[in-house]
View 1 (tube, rainbow, N blue to C red):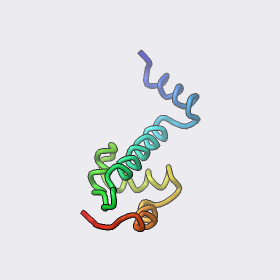
View 2: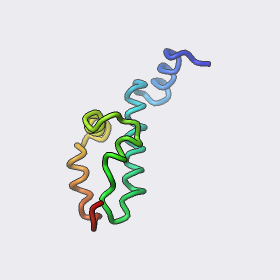
View 3: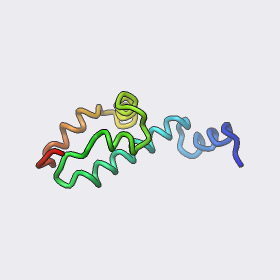
Length: 88
């Protein structure tokens, strides 16, 4: 089994980023996949997306979203409005 330090070093070597950044990136990828899977012309439930992606609150999600994508989540959502026909 790998120690925490060894796992962190491995992620750093494989992905060129810290373990925490890698986890944030994976969680944001999950959130974006959730958005795609649950939109279907409707506004996805944002809180469900946030919590299913492993974030504990909206503040940490919004901060990670901006860090990983370079775009704020409200800006992302605004761009997505053209694909939404109804709201849940």
